[in-house]
Image (cartoon, rainbow, N blue to C red; front, side):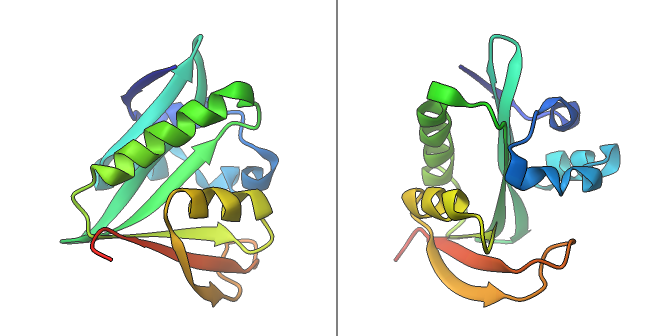
Length: 142
């Protein structure tokens, strides 16, 4: 797998995992460009296929919100994706990185916890589809 800087067009090339497909309609070119401009991000590519994109959106000094879009067909590449995202987070300049996980997305909860995030809250009707989400945070200093 190659890790390259995120480009806005990468989003349209991901065959998203089923749990994220409902949000695909919001990933228009303007949104993708905003993600590119709002903070560091990268893309994982294997054999010309985009496996996922991830990054952070800077909120202010020392605080950012993490995002990730993953392919539904990662197979054995998930371990490499996980390591790349973990390394990215470990090297981040931000002391606090937040993430939101759809409330009923068990695999998402397992992964975010494996990345060192702790659940801080439950947000009702948070998602565009009216679904609930959980707020997670990863603190560099504690």
